[in-house]
Image 1: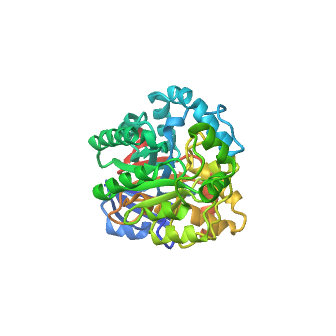
Image 2: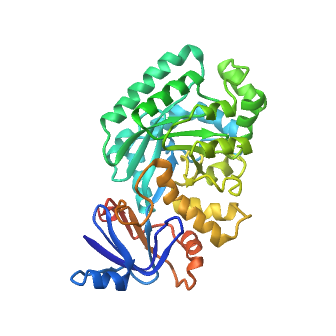
Image 3: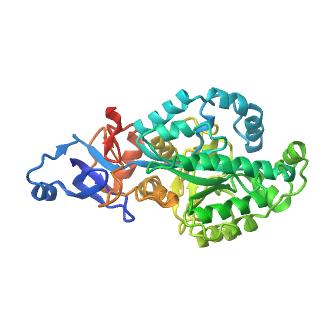
Amino acid sequence: MKFFYADWLVTCDDDFTIVKDGAICFDEKIIDIGTYEELKVKYSDKNIEYLGKNSVVMPGFINTHVHLEFSANKTTLKYGNFVQWLFSVIKKREELIEKADKKLIDNELTKMIQNGTTTIGAISSYGFDMNSCIQSPINVVYFTEILGSKPDMIDTLFLDFKEKLKSAEKNSSKKFIPAIAIHSPYSTHPFLIREVLKMAREKDMVVSTHFQESAAENDWLNYSEGEFGAFFKDMLDQHTSLTKPSDFLYQFKDIKHLSFTHCVEANEQELQQIHDLGASIIHCPNSNRLLNNATLNLSYIKDIPLAMGTDGLSSNHTLNMFEELKNAVFIHTNFEPNQLSQKLLLAATNGGAIALGLQKGILKKEYDADIISFQLPDTVEDKDELATAIILHTTQTTHTFIGGVNELLK
């Protein structure tokens, strides 16, 4: 068993409970939490290690949406317009995937652990990141992704998807959990969506999908026009959308752990459908900004569980969750900063666990001991301001425990 205490223990439970001079006891699971004085009496024969002045202990971050296969991008892809970015991805994807070898992806996973991420939702289009995800100490919910809308390619695409999913399932473990992703309503044929979701229900798998990420997507799905008109005509000789947003959402009934990423263009009816499905929304603010998409209106989704993701380096400059949260504080100007910071920290921990169906993200007895600690540069006097201080003044951790093991010592 390990015993630590810090100036602040942030549980990230639903009430955002903070314990001053908090202590924690854990092995692979969290055994006990409380004040230092309480645990000192309870475990009088144990040495409880102090983590230092202005120290904080909290759950590890859960990055629910990341594309590792495009980790080689720095200045290759075009930002500023979603459709232009998408064209550049299609043009440059072979080049970027070739550059994103195992060494590069391993390095990004190591940096994520150093930055306090203990669990990821990895969206894999090709399966080239699988070995890195299997071998990393980080917890991975591994989403094998289906996409493709050309009718004459459906059988081939479905067969390829099933083979990739089978490979993921063969490597299933406590730390590597196979899951299913549907790319988006505009890029995936309804037949593939139906058949893949049938598999997800039969296997009780976590499911995720992009939804309403851009104005171009919204215009195409609803009116079969807009910027995507030329894209689909030139690329696929397709002139009308294969589905409407509400029809797409309807297909996800009876999926136990379900998330929709982005949703910045989702209207009131669509948000209500997401709510009724019991799904989460994954927020990727840096990606939304760089592709010049709308900002997710957090006021509109207050009754829907919120999770956080960095998206991939194809549409971000970092996979550091502290940086993602920092930018989110400045983007959402309609919220008071301290309340917003608490909401964001909850989304990056507790909310991520809900989206991925995991017993993590909260400092609570019997929960997985995925725990991070760090020291703030100065004293925080008011605990209501602690979340803001954490987001603004932290980029790396001093300890990152995954399953009770400090991965920074390896």
